[in-house]
Amino acid sequence: MVVAGQLEDKNPSRKRSALVVEDDPDVRGLVGRMLRASGLDVAEVAEGRSAILHLAVHQPPDLVCLDLMLPELSGYDVCEYMRGDARLQGVPILIMSARALPQDRAYAEQVGASSYLVKPFKQKAFQAAVDALLVPAAAAVPQ
Image (tube, rainbow, N blue to C red; front, top):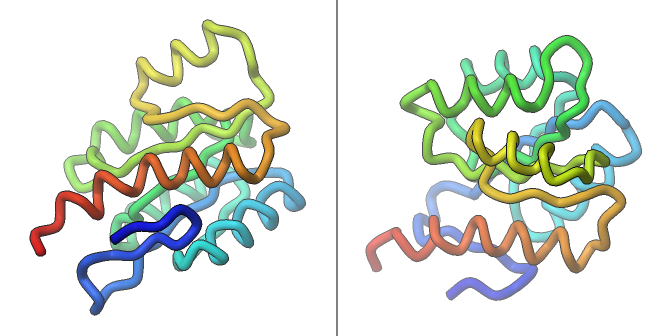
């Protein structure tokens, strides 16, 4: 059973994980702490190129929390990379961005974002978005 704020995997041998891609160290740290409090293992990187390198060499995470405005490669570029890689196509991508225009959200969806939160956001809204993205993955695991 998945309870809001306490995400669990049906495979007890593997803890669920998330990758946080955010160039602002305060936001990155806050998001990482909230995900750890939900029971996830969390890796954090500060820019798009580091995200792609991380994704290329590590087991795919259960969730990617991604800023759009990043140094070197944008969050849009990271989305496109993930959706073009067979190993990463099913990984949910939660965009966290200060870009609030409808065309920003539409383009994020076009390149593969699963959900979109406008910064600043409340912890409750963040947790609800994370829960919504991770529940389907937990429900898909046979009991």
